[in-house]
Amino acid sequence: MALIKVRFYSLFSRGLGADTITLQADDVHEALLQIAKAFGSRIRRELESEGISLDGEIRDYGLILLNGTNIRNLKSTDLRDGDTLQVFPRAIGG
Amino acid sequence: MKQDTLDLITRSAETLTGDDGTKRLVINLITATSVSLSSGIRVKDVEIAALRQGIIPLRYIRNVGTVGLTGQIRMLESTVAVVGAGGLGGNIIELLARNGIGHIIIIDDDRYSEPDLNRQIMSTETDLGEPKATVARKRAMTVNSSTHVTARQERLTPKNAATLLRGARVVADGLDNLQSRYAVEQACRDLEIPYVYGAIAGLGGHIMTVFPQDPGLSSIYGPHDVASGQGIEAAIGTPAVTPAIIAALQVQEVIKIITGVGTAIRNRILMIDASRGAIHAVELDK
View 1 (tube, rainbow over the protein chains, first blue to last red):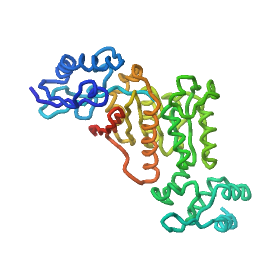
View 2: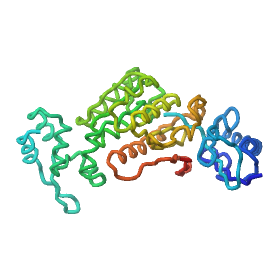
View 3: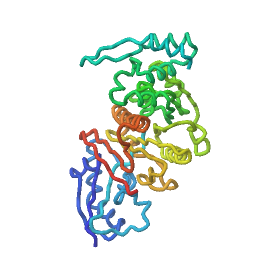
View 4: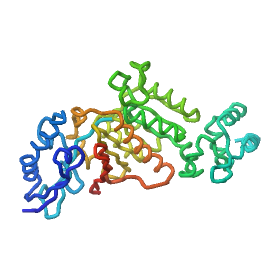
C-alpha cells in the first residue's frame, strides 16, 4: 500500500479547513473512495453552510490530477509512495 | 514610409522631462493623428515609425519603461485573437487595446443580456441585446484609435477555428465551455501559435499558457472526448472581480509572449483563490 499526499485547493481546502492530508491506498480509485468517505460529505456540508450546493461526488465537480496529470489520462492508476493527488474545483466559466 | 513623413514625425516630437529628470522625445495623440491624416498612413504606423526613431507616443510612455521601445513596436505589429467577449474576454480586449496591440480579432456570436452586467466590462444597460463582438470592437477602438479591430460575430467550432484564428500571433481564451476551448487549443497547435487559457468559478480561477508542444488542457480536464459539461460556476456563479483578475493575468501572458519580457506560465496552472488571497501553482506532468 502506498503512502500518498492529497492536496486540496481553493474552495475544497476552504470546505475541508486543511490543504493537505495523507492516506494509504493501492490505486487512485481506492484513494478517491477514501477521500469521498472521509472528506466528501464534510466539504459538501461546509460549503452548503455558505449556501453552495454541489451535486454528486467530488470527482463530478472537482478536477483530480495525479502528479500533474488528470487521472483520466493515466495509463496505470497504481499508486507509489510519495505520489500526490491534486484536487481542485472544476472551473470552466468565462 | 516616405522620408518627408519621417522628418515630419521627428520635427513634431517634443521633449518631456520625467520626474527623475530624464528627458525623452515624445509625440502626442493629436500630432500622431495629424501626421496620419496629412501623410495618408495609419496612426499605428506613425507610432511605429516614431518608436523606431526613439520617439515615444505619449500614450505608451508608461509601458516602455517595462517593455522597451522594441516591445512596444512588437505589440503594435501584433495580432491577438480573443475568443469570447464576455467576462474574461471583455477585460482582455480592454487591456490589449490599452497596451497598444495593433490588431485584435474578437470572436463571439452572443449578445449582451442582463446577467452579463455584473462582470462583462464592455456591457452597459444601453447595449443589452447588442452583439458582444461589435460592442467590444467599438469600445476598443475608442480606447485606442491605433488598434485595428476585427469583429467576427460567429461561433467558433472545430471546423472554422483555424480559419478564424489565422494571422494571430497568440490567442486569448475568453470562453465558457470546454468544447470550444479544446477546438481553440487544437487550432493553435495546427497554426503553431501559443494559446492563453483562463477559466473562472466563484472567487477562483486558473491561468496557463499552452505552446503547441505542451500537453495543455488535457492535463487539467482529461481527454477531449470525455471532458464536457459545466463547472462549479453553475453552482457558485461568476462574481464581478474574478474575471478581471484572471483576464489581467492572461493579458500579461500575451504581452510577455509578444515582447519577450518575462517568462510565460507553461506546464503549470496558476490557481488564484481570491477568497483567501492565495496563489498556487500546480505543476503539470510534461
